[in-house]
Image (cartoon, rainbow, N blue to C red; front, side):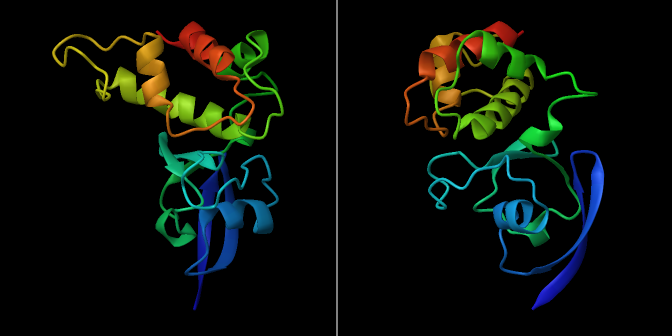
Length: 167
C-alpha cells in the first residue's frame, strides 16, 4: 500500500508517495536525493543514518517514513544556515573529527540532538548526580554518543569538537 505525504525536511516541503513499509533513510536517499544521510548497517546499530526529528535523534534506517509526516526532519544538508556551517560542523573540521567521513553526518546530527538532550536535563548512564545541572565531560560525551560508531577511530576529535561546542 502507498501513501501520499508532505514531508518537512530542512525547512522545505517535499510531496512524496511512499510504500507504508519504506524507511525514512530510503526515502531521503532514493526519492529525495538527500544522500548526506548514510546507510551503514541498516539495523540501527551504527548510527550513520542518524537524523533529527523535531530536534531529537532518530535512526532513519529504523524509522518508517509514514511516521514522520507531521515532524520537522533535519538532515546533515540542513545544518548550515545561509551557507554558514553549523558551529559543530566547524568544530569537527578544527578538531579533525573525521577521517573517511562516512559516519560524519550521523555523528553531527546525533551530537546536535545529544546536546539538546543534555540541555533539557536528560541524564545518561554515567551521570553521577541526577540533581546537579548537567555537565558534559568526556565520559558523558562518550556515553551519550555511544550509539554512533566510527570505523576509523576518530573518537578523540569527535569528543573534542563536541566539548568545544557544548555549553
